[in-house]
Image (tube, rainbow, N blue to C red; front, top):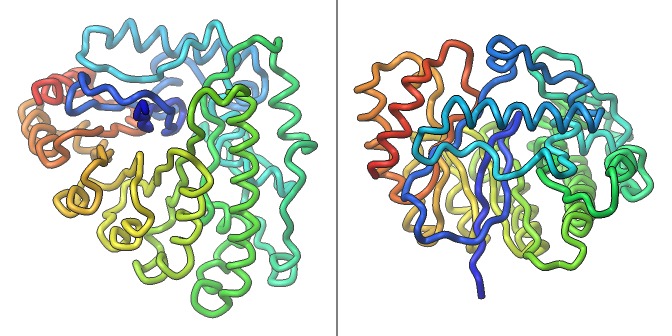
Length: 357
């Protein structure tokens, strides 16, 4: 049976796509993404409401971004931005940003912040409101219908990832700071919220996968975003979140976990109970030797400090990337959200060093 992996790519936020495993690819691949302020300063491209809600603007902007990066960095070894042809498809890259799942709970969305990442302000549900929370009817919801109904024709290839956040992230969006009280004092409240959020995300992703691939010619896949896990102890993760990662792994053929740029060590034993993962990312200070022992078939994805990339010398960057790449062995180095002022030459130095590995 063909083996698939989850390949990270960056399109106004880190996303993942399912690809056949390629034993011939280089051991270390760098995934590069730029902050909205970089795009605005360099090219006058912004990511406000029209980019996210107008399909024509969405497609034109994504196509232009791809062309710009291909022209600017085409000479780099393994410069990987996005695997999709946006020009001849119906792209849906993070159409509602981080607010997609909250919209199904009828939360407001802010599209106009300079960060370029739509979000929903915390709903701060009361205990009573949280315990009354139910799984919404996704198929008839205006958010879902708006995405489906704007497809230009039935034959248009649907490309990209909507962006789903994760159980703990959405739990915080709904409960606010009170979630951290729940974790220790009112676990029955947050368990209910997590259950509802889990079922909602699971439903949305399966609907999307069926829509993108109606003949089920590829495995189903999902990456759960545990961005706020660093606010929990390893014990708390095992008691309150691990079960949802495990249930996602059982619900999808190919499964991975996104933990952001945190040291993953406190959570590794719990995550290892899930079994095989197709994707796992972490901060560079994580114990990669332990990651390899617990997940011998995993190709780790490791975040690199973007401030270091901006401020180190070329020689220092090459040394740093070489050392990190040797620790990773085979996998990805993530340059997510590069800021204005990052020299192209520093990006080139990193790619050149990675290619030599």
